[in-house]
Amino acid sequence: MAPYVQEAQQHPDGAVNLSIGTPVDPTPEIVQKALRGASNAPGYPTTHGTVELRQAISSWFARRRQVRGLDPDAIMPTVGSKELVAWLPTLLGLGAGDVVVRPTVAYPTYDMGAHFAGATPVAADSLAELDPATRAKVRLVWVNSPSNPTGAVQDAAALRAIVDDARGLGAMVASDECYAELGWGAWDPARGGEAVPSILDERVSGGSHELLLSVYSLSKQSNLAGYRAAFVAGDAGVLPNLINSRKHAGMIVPYPVQEAMRVALGDDSHVAAQKDLYRSRREQLIPALQSFGLTIRDSDAGLYLWATAGEDTWLTVKRFAELGIIVGPGTFYGDAGNGYVRVALTGSDERVAAAAARLSR
Image 1: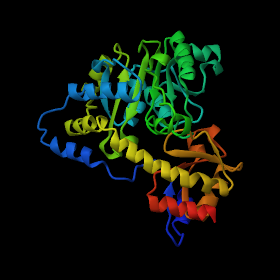
Image 2: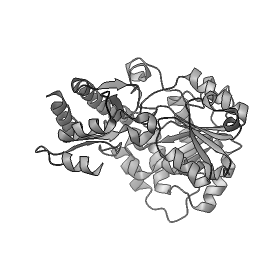
Image 3: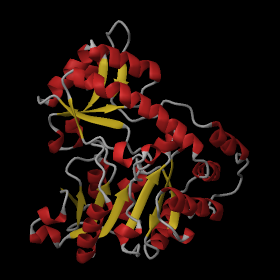
């Protein structure tokens, strides 16, 4: 990307970086206040998380994700979601000869986590795509809905099919759901749509969380990327081992961050306000990208527009750079991403407006 970034930076009106999903809007004051209020924390925090935080997470699941009655003991905070994605295969005891399945177009950390454990990553959107020998070695299946980078959402029936197939192999299903609050169109409850389903939803799980883990982060919904605030919930038989292993490894969320998470999860108003900002930026960028000759694919949820001009990815990246706009190459997310670019909504209102104006001209 270096030469394209350099070219974009030569634009007389400055570069517009829409290549990464780092939030740019302020962390809500209610969350900052909670962090300050908990700053006197001389003792060690608990790996399992405070009871109050885990109760807040359980309540959030019931209120926002249609997952009711989640046992707070089957919940644990994590140091952001990326570290859990990277270390989960290791924490589950996977190794040589084991297969970790991830989507064909996906965030690269799924592959890295398998490599760290000595396991083999395999790209597939359905276990039916795998040959019998590979299927027999599957121990972990990653689901990412809403998807990064494509923004595709899998409905409850599609998720249930994955769960049933994985359980038939005795494999764990870990669902990365970090963009679940950012559904658009049919997945936007604020506009008459339905909420993005969780892997722990009864329609998906069949009423049992066995072999299921839901991973969620507050980075996107609450602008807490700098806090490293996330959690995992699900199989009550697996969580105690994860908690114990992480305690010995020192993977512990600081107490002030736990308190900030607790407060953030109890306040839906700031999430709605932030989503409105992203909705406005999205509504500016979509017609601008289309006028520039791109077709938007999927992009039903999340912070990105997944688009193609029907040409090589790097040619599209160059054409954007000539306008002073930096976008993410689809090839960063696997071979199936060739021909696509990922355009993030995480620019300021002023920078997004500048990008839209350049593209429309």
